[in-house]
Length: 222
Image (cartoon, rainbow, N blue to C red; front, side, top):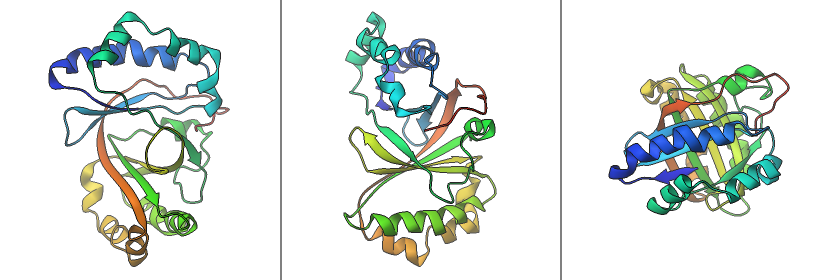
């Protein structure tokens, strides 16, 4: 969930999100993680990110009823801020994702101080080359960089936006100065894939707050 909030509303927005909006969701069965971020270069841009057991969680009565019966404070806040950019993505379990078995508690518990989100839409018909480059070359190269904690890939299931998303948990911004990052982002094959993309968004976020705790090994992130 991406949001833009005018400066005068920031205090009220954070109070509502932290004490009402997220707590109501994290209690729902199948809701595994809840984390909030602020864009590193834009003080009015925010991201809320959640792992779900499966996308069916969003169609179950516990969630649907909560969205239909919004509290007065939630309706008031949503009227004051620009429309939320709600995108639902499904996990791509491709080789090289970097966190191994997503059902492991440690996999769900990974949370860097920074989160790099890269949205990408390749030209129609070039998706196989895009996925092959990402899984076989790009992600393995990034995973070797000290401080690059985890990379995961997703495809759009609901909402408006590029068809694919890569989320990277980072220990610090030092990773961008590492020679391995420079090589990974200037490789000839990447240049060829970039030439065949039709849309692209890249935002670096800093962690504001994490609400989740480690989960049992039987759960699975989506």
